[in-house]
Length: 147
Image (cartoon, rainbow, N blue to C red; front, side, top):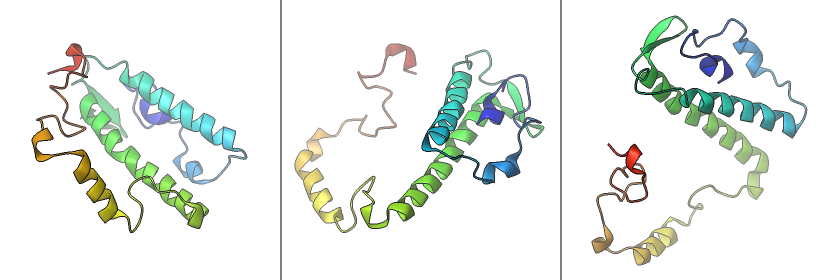
């Protein structure tokens, strides 16, 4: 994340100082080091997102000398990060083994969960903003974010 988003509008996203092979070697010795590094990466990403505006959203940037639009680079990374988060969850699940607490519907509890959901909503409760990702017309969205 640091390589990709540091000076992303003016420098190639694959920085000369990045040693990708070293990223697969565990050099962390404490949980705090891991969390601090994780936070540094996300801060860099969010700081970069805050630099995007109407004037540069469709500007060209480069990653490994490959030209792409700023918006495409953002979507590319937003599609890529869940892959790594899934890896982290998978490792955590293996480490916790029987002590793992599910992040979604518990194993062998789907029918119970679905039954409970059916009691919470009726077919007449549907509105055009029922999807958590399709909320354009929701009163919860500030006017300046609506299309």
